[in-house]
Amino acid sequence: MIPPKTVVFDLGKVLLDFDYTIAARKLIQAGKVTLPQLTKLFTTPADILLRYETGLVTTREFYEHVCALTGYRGNMDQFAACVGDVFDPIQPMIDAHAEIRRKGIPTYIFSNTNELAMRHIMQAYPFMANFDGLILSYEHKAMKPDHALYEVVERVSGFKGGDILYIDDRPENIATGQARGWRVILQEDARNTRRQLTEMGLLN
Image (cartoon, rainbow, N blue to C red; front, side):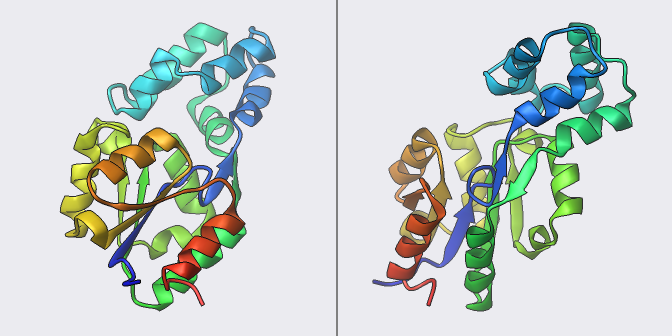
């Protein structure tokens, strides 16, 4: 099997695990709503979070909306710390990325995410500096599985079709990549993903 020419990684649940109930527990200490109400804001497709991750509202607007909705009384820096620090590394996949980089294969991050999350991630995780590019939903005002964002990946990377290997944990996102002729891995657990990467000649 001829290895792909570039590897495109989703971020959440592929390289970093996340749990927005962590943010909810922190925010509840300075608000007026219950924990289930606040958790729902971050774990369901709430209009404000969707708009924020699509880049349709600013970080300031998102903060002010959450404050108005929940009664949160912390300042912007405190809010950023609560909302951003919800991640844990998936070390086997971070190690896999490092090995792929050592082979000289370009790699990219392709993520539905937001500015607050990325501020924290870029500061907390040094491996994030080792990608050739970051394609982030809020910067392009489109979210996976919208084909428009996949077109950005092709334009930024310079690759198309089977030259691209794409790893994501969501079947609908994988399906759009597959429809464009990309090679894909649906990540269900890191061990299985690493096995498939090895079969493709990307890991030893």
